[in-house]
Image (cartoon, rainbow, N blue to C red; front, side):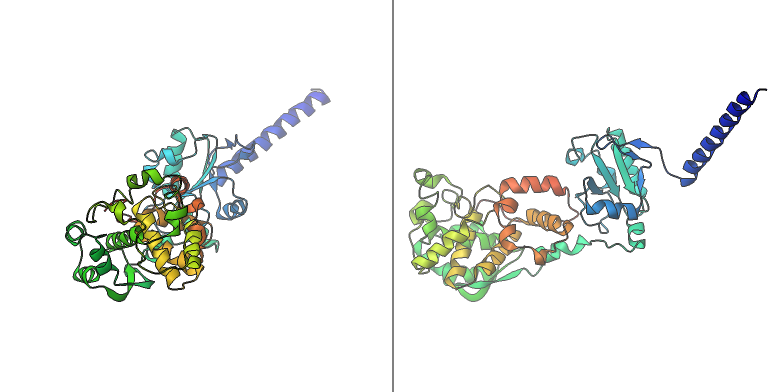
Length: 397
């Protein structure tokens, strides 16, 4: 054998030896197959990701991050959505449209996320990984978990919220003027003895809203907002662009609990004497208060919640409440009128590291977060929630 042939043979043996070492290493890691990351050109050596690696990637997050654990036992900050591991196929409309998009899944131990990963791959997703060891491994590395299981108690406490305004003689006044037909109201609205007293005799107790009385509160404030003279009706869309259609809105034509036509009472009474400065303040605040049932601000109160929010703003301005406090209190009202939306919004902010008590109320009520258009986009971003949202009001008496 020539020296040259011997060298070639030795090189082949050495190459085979190196390949065996590499193969043995890959088997020893217990990792799964190599996948090509088409969206970035990177090679992902595993379908698993460690807690440390995930922590680094979250600092400059550019992937869809999904908690698939059920029941809810907490989550990692910057989670995009919550989908039960066995509901992936049923929830596929919540997933990225791009099958090459990078997705990272996690659960508590890694078992559910592994199952979810298999499901996603069967749906055609090519860049899916899951957190090895799940939230357990995340905690073992000393990283924090968010627990949103108490979020509903923060946004919608069972005892409700007390507002810095009272019913006073609102009920008797509205009944005497005919804005509220007492017999119609009693038939349409389920009232306890205390609410019947508020309607018939008035009350100096602060207005309180909770899940049990949210419909009563919206209906009483709706009637007040309808009748109270306001710059909003004189200079806003209902007084300008849509003046000829004034009786066709849910807030006007939809108020069926008056004596006669509701429009006859619109913008007619000084139930509280607001001066010019106060009227201006009401108008200005109303432009920044939206509601998720439509795309309009309170400046255009074309539904019951808009008109009720206007009444609450008027009552608080009359009492001299600061702008910041007014926004905070209207957010409390909106939360009980639209519980599902504000639980979703609270979840969104929490996943960005902002607790509900730190959320700017004016921002939360803005077009960006509280309009009907924003509600649709937010639901798409956050996905299904592990909270009971089976209560709230509707846009009608």
